[in-house]
Image (cartoon, rainbow, N blue to C red; front, side, top):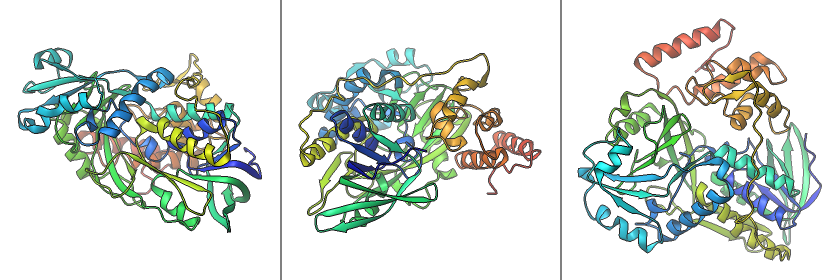
Amino acid sequence: MINLPSSSDVLIIGGGATGAGIARDLAMRGASVVLIEKGDFCAGASGSNHGMLHSGARYASSDKESARECAEENDILKRTASAYIEDTGGFFVALPEDEGSFTDSFQSNCRAAGIYTRELAPEEVLREEPLLNPDITRAFEVKDAAVDPFMLVNATIASARAAGAVITNYSKAVSMNLGDEGIESVRIERAGRTCEIKPQLVINAAGAWAGSIAAMAGQNLEVGVDKGTMAVVDGRAANHLINRLRKPADADILVPHRSATIVGTTSSPGDLNRIRPTAEEVENLLREASKTIIGLHSMRTVRAYSGVRPLAGAGGRNASRNFNVTKHENSNMISVVGGKLTTYRLIAQKVADEAAGFLGISSACRTDREELPVLEKFRSKQEVCSCEMVSRDSLIEWSKSDDVTCAADLMRRTRAGMGYCQSGLCAFDIVSCMEGDPVQMLQDFLSERWKGEEAVLYDQQLRQEVFKSHLFKVYNIDHSGGN
């Protein structure tokens, strides 16, 4: 287990992309940094998006500041994090019902925000993407790309640790001791034990839970919580990232991601106590997306998942995707809310600038120039997850990490179990690489995977899943977790 120091310059609460980025930036500037995450890294909103590296074009018509930020960070991350990005390129395509002022002003709005676009003839796009609806009327090329959020965040954490940061998951802030000048100490619970840290500065990067962390410090912080659901379709329905050329709505983004296509996203009021997709949401996503990609609705949907967007203010489709950095009055706490995965590095830089000023650190940010490390991939002749091409060597090496406590942690670092069979063929191999009760581990792992499958099952696929469930029950394992 990683030992936490009794004091530090900075304590960061939240181990998603933003928190990890802040830890890296500040550690590279020479600050002593501790980061704690109550669950696993990237298990919240950072790992529950559609894996899109925005070109900025999606926001050019409604939020030019966010659009410019996305365009700039898109270029930076393609230079500094290329190992975790598939530079697919993207198309915005319009159907006949999309024609109107939004479509007509799209390119001029992009140009005003400094975003590259190039109009193409519909027949040219259809040659590259034959499954697109042949009725498309207009099409634009943009610089969108696909990004692996799990690998990106873990690489950011590895870089932060290499710079001296102390980072631990499954560690929860449970209380704060407050004094005249703010937070004097933070009590942390980890592995059934508690410890205390005395930081000069606390950075609240807890995402959708940032409001409750601020309240712990006696501060008020408004956080809009917006739920988004995505569906995962087996196979690549397109090779470019496809956007519907209309005002943002459900099912207007399709992201080719490794061997699958991610369809997103919905927008509805978020409930932090129940972040799960529904069958109705999935049905709506597939029905609407089938208007863009012909036949998508009949393809095999292997999974659905939901996340909650922490927004700077009220939620909803029209909410800004910008971010707010708040230095609380009469307190040594900085809170950050909002933003997108694409701009996580920039958000971290802005927070780190504020923190450096508070701490008297003069070093400048270097994350816009220095590349993230490439996480080592272990290959052997024995491949245990053929869907994602993960070897036993890789599973064994990652299982030795202090960060890995369960099969789901192992999955998030190797992608084993994320593919076509959704761990149906590799679950036993994944668990066999872990220490502990294998039956209980398998039970917990499969029941968690089931949460993303139950909303997509019907007809022949449902019969196949029931058969798979019976196979697991031969080993006295309840595949559905009792649901």
